[in-house]
Length: 221
Image (cartoon, rainbow, N blue to C red):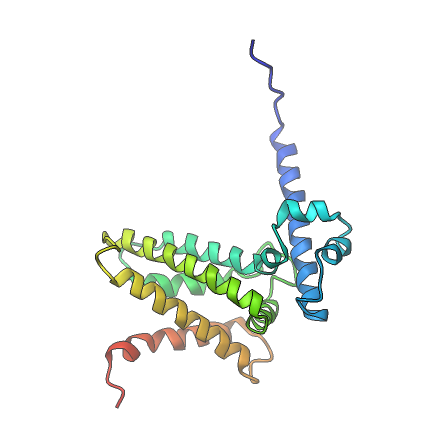
């Protein structure tokens, strides 16, 4: 005999999801604040959970470990970038699609997110934290390689290519990832960029992307 299943009101389900997202956002914000104040190594999961007034058990419902919460914002941003890339018009060249997607991903920073993570300044602080923390940098580079694989698949599918035999999608994905990282580091290390203006950040990305073609194929003399 079938067991009756109680219906869940969509409104109730929506409230629960918003509450879960709010708790997740609060944990990420608290983690980043503590990491910047006292360092990644000295911050414990218990401290992060306590600052949001939740239990350690609740923390582990959202994140597997401290490393995962530290990289959560970048993981979310990368997922946004991949979704944008999947939706780019087919008439664009692969490089154009990548360039437009990364610009749009940066422009959506802060939409529907907490104040600390939802700002260019907060993103740059996170980059600096990762670059200065060997454990996080190693984890981030591993994740970057996974994203590179996904970019390769998306570009190959867009162009009707088999990446196992045509090297162009993988080469482009690898070079694009390196250029974006260099653009981020260039902006973050420039003392003149203290105002953290999004237009300035996008200009740095554009400058690096526009140099990609000449750097690979043009004369350097």
